[in-house]
Length: 388
Image 1 (cartoon, rainbow, N blue to C red):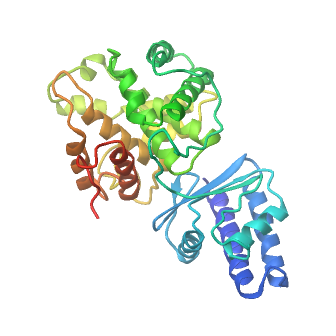
Image 2 (cartoon, one colour):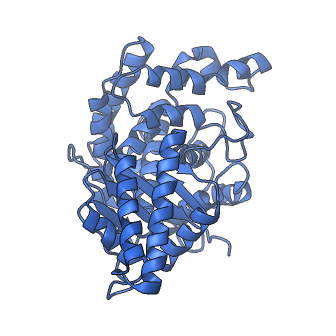
């Protein structure tokens, strides 16, 4: 998001917040509320001039706009509080949004609607809660508009492995990727995940495939989808997150194979070459038509770590994308739970303890807690319990 777009977004939030505050004091019919609502509607139309939608997520004391965490200021802080007080965790506004829909949003935020517990979505404004919802196969709420082939767990590994090998062979030959194959693969994962309800069950179906690059990339994709669904992300944004996860390690195809398969510790020179793979992967994806820009960002950022102690080095004011931070979590988790020639897989409770210790350092604290809650719900209660 460039500076002009960011300024337009903050102007929209400022007018929306002011309209809701005034509506709570004076009612929706007050002239100042009408004026501020019109400014908010005009502002969001400016934001949506060259895009299909706009989304924001409130996670504890952090506001994430289009995947980018925002600096906590007076406006963003008060806006987060207002969302929390209304039980709203995420907002997605589509390009066709109308003035009456903005008025309805203001009414919802100001508690002017009759039912203060009801989240009032509309055709072009989707409101939802940021909850971790899972009770097995029954009652699990996963919203997605994705479409694609309907696969079962039985045929998933064989169909997707062939697709994946074709994608990676294309990259090895320095050809251009075709987005359709990747989009269908992600849709297939979403469909199976919806039917099975458990990311670990879907990942288990892939475990017997003797192709680490395939299983790791698809596992990271599935874990990212689980995280995103738990945050209420759906539709095209959900699919883009899945595609970005599948391609997060694409830059490793530009690293000499003897370095990739080396079982011992890499030398300083070899590690320096390995550290180039995020940049090489991002550059390749940026030059590939049709690939979501998010995929290039994710490829570039997925080894940075939350405290920027990873690589590549970036300016001090760099803001990591939400997708990249989810990928860091999924990537680390899967690397520890997967059997490698030089190491047995770790038990889930052991991995959870390690990740708790990394919260706020290498890993995003809120996203990591949410991730471990998802995993915890799929384990026996005595195996892992999130700390208070």
